[in-house]
Length: 309
Ligand SMILES: Nc1nc2c(ncn2[C@@H]2O[C@H](COP(=O)(O)OP(=O)(O)OP(=O)(O)O)[C@@H](O)[C@H]2O)c(=O)[nH]1
Ligand SMILES: [Mg+2]
Image (cartoon, rainbow, N blue to C red):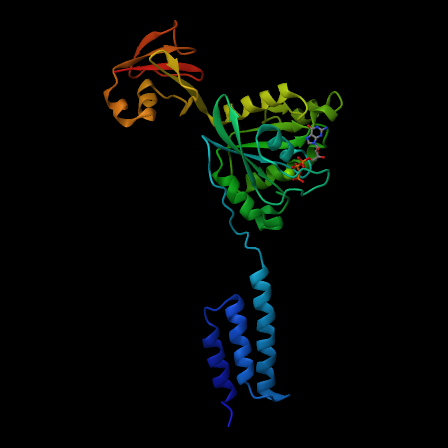
């Protein structure tokens, strides 16, 4: 006498709870082996249900879960490159860092966010290419929610559009970011500027009056330097060189704007922050080279500081 079909269905469901992937498929096959082999009626329906479950399990385990993507932060700040496909985002990453990244003359060459470290005035900053942010991203088109999730945690955004592009190409990207309630310091890189006819930049500037527009070409070093400096300004950080015993450290410290001499000492070591008397300062915040200042003196980008204890 076979088990009543309702009892079998209940048991089958119980045995499948919490099982996914190969384990679930194995359990389903075991259940099918226990099922009486009728061609019609409730047992045949159960067999059909189980066959369908195998297929569904397969689909589920192949699905790429893109609800969230995280890009591990490195460096003093994280800055996203966002824009329509094929504008040259990867090429900029490649020009400014050591990474090897696929570039190509077709859209969607990059399919996942790609981080790359670049050195700006001696400080490492992380650039992240955000590919494929398209209209409908907030409704998860093109895995947009995960991409917006990455954008939510960056410090600043560089929008990228081809210098000679129709400004309308960038608008959906800006709209999706705004719709997601993301508002970060930003500028607009007018990419592939070497290909653009005169007057192209004016068109972009007129279309996006709220954004500083900066022409960039990967074959123009000066434009890449200007790009780096613009990225640095976005971070809102300042660079301070440390001097001790007459020698200046190789890597500058990155500090928040408004940092004082005490913050500089704190960044070196907490004890130093507590015990310092003042500092000697060279550079933009000093009235003259080696000026003696107190604990609360505010340092500026490009200063050199010697802590006095
Ligand atoms: N002339 C010129 N071509 C460039 C420049 N930057 C990129 N390109 C070319 O533009 C094409 C697209 O470059 P990618 O860097 O792959 O563009 P992307 O924005 O990362 O593209 P997706 O990842 O597909 O969205 C490639 O053929 C590059 O060689 C540039 O400054 N000048
Ligand atoms: Mg790319």
